[in-house]
Length: 107
Image (tube, rainbow, N blue to C red; front, top):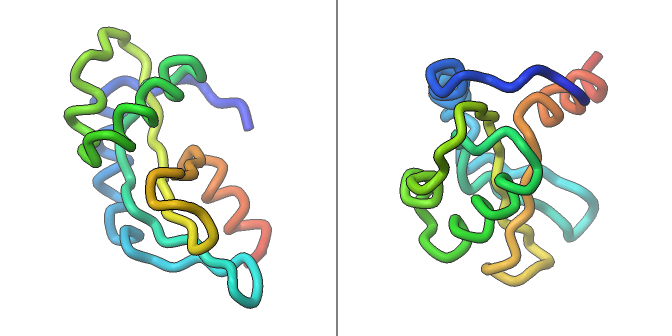
C-alpha cells in the first residue's frame, strides 16, 4: 500500500493514537500467533526502516533505534514477536497495512 511519507509530528500523533494495541495477540492459525511488541515511529523508506528494525532488535528501544536517523520522512510501524520465531527475530508491518488488512477482515 503506497502512501506519502509522514512528518515526524504526524507519525508521533498516529503512533500515540494506536498505543492501545500494544500487547494485543493476533492469531495466524491454531498454534501460531503474534504479540504486538511496539507501535513506533520509524524512517519512511525501506533501507532506513530495515536499519531501524536491526537497531530496535538490539536495544528494544524505538527512540534509541531512531536516534541516528537524520531524515525528514517517517512512518509508523507495528513490531511483532511471533510464537514460532526466536525472540530476536522480530516481524513488522506498517500501521497503514495493518489497518487495511484489519478492515478487509471486518468489512
